Every structure is written in C-alpha cells, then in structure tokens.
Amino acid sequence: MQKRQRGFVLALCLCILSVSGIYGLHRYRSGQASQEQEEQIAEAEEIPAEAQKETANSEGTVAQADTEEKETEEAKIETEEDIYEIGEATLAQTETDSVTTQAPAAGAPEEENTYETEEAAEEILADESLLSFAADSALMWPVDGEVILEYSMDKSIYFSTLNQYKYHPAIVIGAEVGDEVWSAAQGIVSAIDVNEETGTTLTMTLGGGYEAIYGQLKELAVQEGDMVEAGSLIGYVSEPTKYYTREGSNLYFQLLRDGEPVDPTEYLN
Image 1 (cartoon, rainbow, N blue to C red):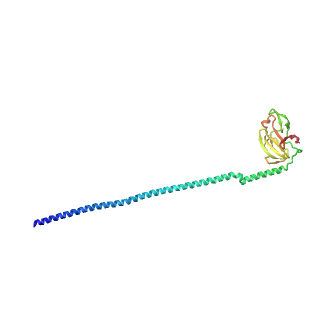
Image 2 (tube, rainbow, N blue to C red; image 1 turned 45 degrees about the vertical axis):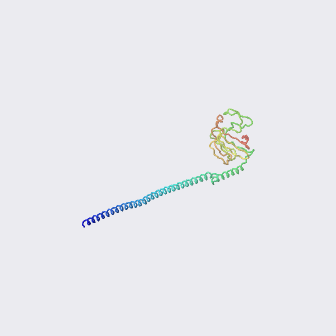
C-alpha cells in the first residue's frame, strides 16, 4: 500500500515537473514570439518614420529647389526688366539724339533761320534794285592819297616788293596806317574775306553789274548785308601785307564790271 502511494506521489511530481517544463517552454517561446513581434512592430514603425524623414528631406529638397528656381526666375525677371528698362532708356536717348540731330533740318529754329536767311536775301535783292551805278556814274576817292601802282591790263608794270613786272587789275593808293576808308559809292556789302595778298578785303555790290573791292583794311565798320551810302566809313588802312612792304601802307582798290576788271580812275572824280 505504501509503495503504491509513493509511486503515485512520484508520478504526480513528474507530471507537475513536466507541466512546469512545458509551461516554461511555452512562456519562453511566447516571450520570443512577443519580442520578435515587437521588433517587427518597431521596424514597421521605423519604416514610416524613415519614409517620412526621407519624404520630408525630399520635400525640403524640392522646396529648396523650388525656392532656388523661384529666386532664379525672379532674378531673371529682374534682369529682363532691367534689360527692358535699359533698352527703353537707350531707345528714348536714341530718339532724343535723333530728334536733336534732325532738329537743325526740320526744327522750328532752323526753319526760322532759313526763313530769316531767305528774307535777308530777298531784302538784299530788293535793296540791289535800288542801286543804280552805271557806266556814267562817278566814284568818290575812298582814301586820301596818291596812286602808287596804277591799273594796267594792257602792259605789265614793275612791283618793287616782288621785283617783277606783271599786269595789275586794280590801283594801289598810298595812305597811312589807321587812315579812314570811305565807301566810293552807294552799295551793299556782299563779302568780307582775308587773303594773303590784300589782307582783309571787302567786296561791295554797286548795281548795274558793278562791284567795288577794298583791300588792306582793318577794324571794319560794316558787315555783310549792310547797305552803305557813298562817303560812309567802312574801315581803316591796315599794315601792308608782304606783297607791298616796299610800297608801304596803302589801300588796294579794284572795280569790276560783270566780273571783269575796269580802270577805277576813269570813274573817280
């Protein structure tokens, strides 16, 4: 009887040990399974986090790229606007320069100048119609003095300064530097110029195809376009040019008829 009881207790203990072992193994396996499941869950949670991080990085990169692109576009727009503004300014300046350049040809001031020039020319023509010099008209002596070089177109005469003989289409009247020179007849001053031989030279239209030319002048009292009465002051005797150093200071006086020289002494009173 006691042997059966001991065997029963022993068997019960073995059963309990077996159940405990099975339970422990089950708990062990359950713990591993739970750990693996937790790791999987953690990995599953990390993946979205990394994905979100990558997405965020991607979005940040895209946003940065968008920002840089936007800034580039804005800079481009600003540059294009600057270019446009510069182009507009250049065009405006070019148009202004063009208008300025064209103004003398088409502007009001130039038209006024042209009109005034034409008006002056018409006045000169009108004044010339008042001139009445003719072959029988007389000339006043333009300066007090003696003729030191005569008019000579049919034979040559001697020029001391040049030391040569040559034809002479005018007369040279000796005078002192600073002597007054008067208009020999009524006329209009048609030209004032300077040349090597006769210095400051004044040409006056007398009418009837006649012109009087006065050379070796200075300090003129008239200007081109002036109507000058006979006997009016037109200037003063100047120092002689190098062509007349031996002859001394003088007035060069020439008379033209239809552009050809004639002897002034035939008209001088």
